[in-house]
Image (tube, rainbow, N blue to C red; front, side, top):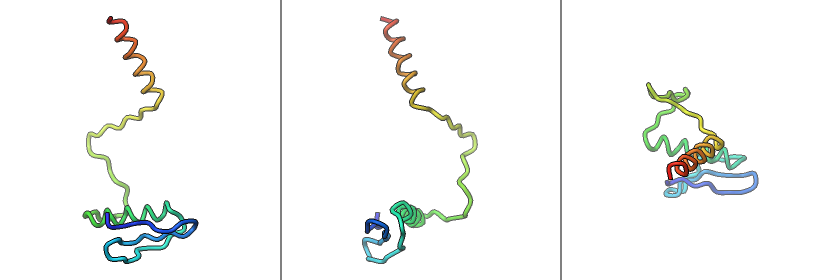
Length: 84
């Protein structure tokens, strides 16, 4: 990762660590991080289109909450206890 965020408070810069080139000035670390990720994506062949990414055909998205995970763990441990 040749990019780094430098600064603190209300002034941040994104800098190329290899060349020392400054790629942008930002008022928050969050904005600087977004710029750094953009630069890394472009470096790896990503081409910005301005459109949101599409899900792959046939992909299923499932929302799992921590309550679901706890319930599932409780049910599995209960079933294991009943099997003994």
